[in-house]
Amino acid sequence: MAVQPYSFAVVEGCRTVISQMFYSSYDQSESMISLIDDAMNRKGCTLALLQGVGVVVGPGQYTGVRMGVTLAKSLAMGLSIPVVGMTVFEALLQPYLRHSGLYLACIPARKEEYNVQLFGVKEGNLFSLTAYFSLRSCELTLFLSQFKMPIYVVSVTDISGVDTVYNIVTDVDARYISRYALASISMQKKDDDVRPIYSHYPNAGKSNQKIKGCL
Picture 1: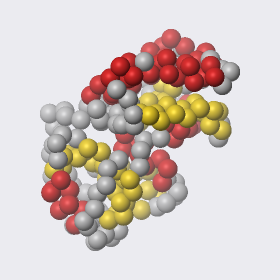
Picture 2: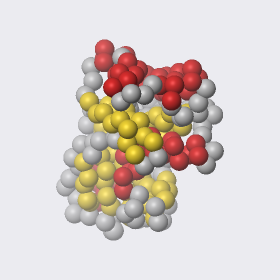
Picture 3: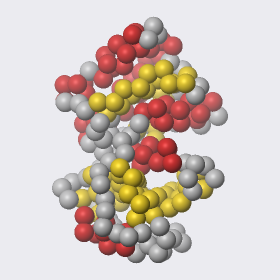
Picture 4: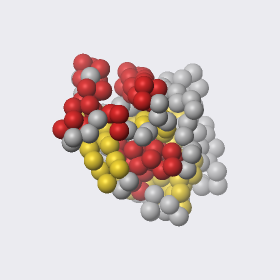
């Protein structure tokens, strides 16, 4: 629920049991648990069958992040199951872990501003190269122009204008978060304290991040 469209999914191993994506109003956000419960009932299963919960903790829309994390933790507590959190940037890059390269995950922030984080993907593993930070639109173009090697920009909005950029426009897909949570729980890598990350902490907005050996 960090960025629109919202989504939820239920997986069993490699099989997707439920996958639903939709744009939401505030009232619909409040009824997410009912949407999940109804979808499971239509498949002949119940919330009691869940073995774990995965959630995108942000950064992103304040209300969506807060409600999503609260819902996930409430489910985990009520069902006595583990909860696993991941950032929206990690969630955006999950479908591309088989393709090694340099990636910038990007979501809208304030007006004409983006929250971004730089990653490397190698041999199916995701490596964070910077903390997340914020850039204005003009700063983002300048930032990307510094790279001498191709870089993939994975974003929920179109980013263009730089020759070395491969822009991938996509949405956060809950199926990947569910599978990530399932794998983490099976390897006992669950989170004991999942907390929301909001877009505008006091240190957000600093664009002087140093890139680890990439420029």
